[in-house]
Image (cartoon, rainbow, N blue to C red; front, side):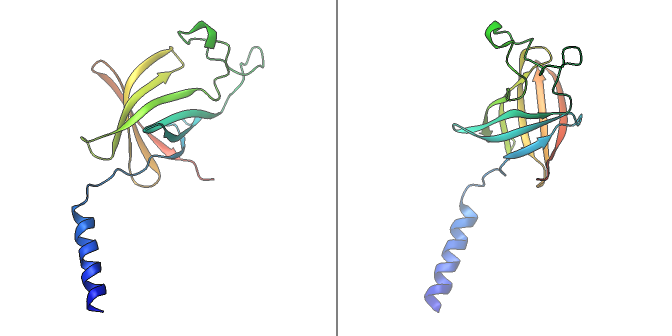
Length: 145
């Protein structure tokens, strides 16, 4: 019994000195405006996010699926918005803790923005996108499945 207690105490001490790891941002998230879902998942050494649901996925004029018409790559302008990667290569940052930094693709203007994601509890994701010093912060909510 003493060996078990000693081993447990040693494991506890090692656990207390081990570096903390950020909460996992994986999941499907409802954007703040409520009109899209983004799936955040492992992607290489970090995380990426893909559009998986749009409230209005079709063009109101043509009735066809919305496309990535403002993409700077002309070859991608006819691709459907659904399935587009909008959060790219988010890698865990040391400061601030529990935060990943990467780039956001904005299909509204076809531009890339510096950004970060940070879980806030189990059901919220704080999302920040910046162009230069101008930043916007949103809170996304986990989609219950």
